[in-house]
Length: 227
Image (cartoon, rainbow, N blue to C red):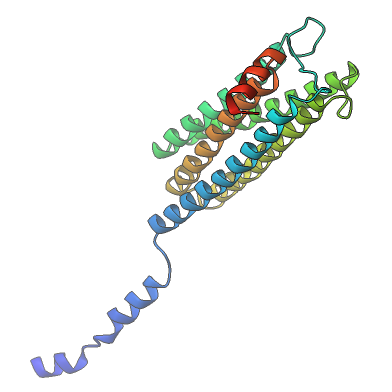
């Protein structure tokens, strides 16, 4: 009887199943690959803004450069609206962390509320930036009127484009969640989104400081950097 059982065994089936399984990367491997890709992308963005910063600091030492703050009549001497926009982006960055935590706890209602808050405050940030651009134009600080104006529109515009790209990826995460309701996958995606939002918040705070500095600050920074 044992002989017949041995002859009926199909030892190749488990091996075939294992080979088929190995054709698909594990969830952990996918998460690691996505994390690596995001970090590489963030490194590229860092290089872009670094190069912009170098050229901007060099331009601040030109005779035709006029800083946008320092004197009472300059637009960013009172930067209340920019602080408001910064608060929007900070809240969005915090709420996406909360959404990730709630996804790990599989709290559907909490996830929906937190993700809605993230989307809302991110859109408020973008809308606030557009409003600042409009106010600059209405006050006569056109993009071509002064190198400081040009760099402000350029740097904040590039930053806004990265924010919009993040919103599109964020919406894609929500779409996938609505299809499979996988909290594990959602938490993994939101972890990467949170890293991206934190990075963009850091970039914005850096740009905020850089673009709203007065002439004396630019002179000191340029002297320190050897320009």
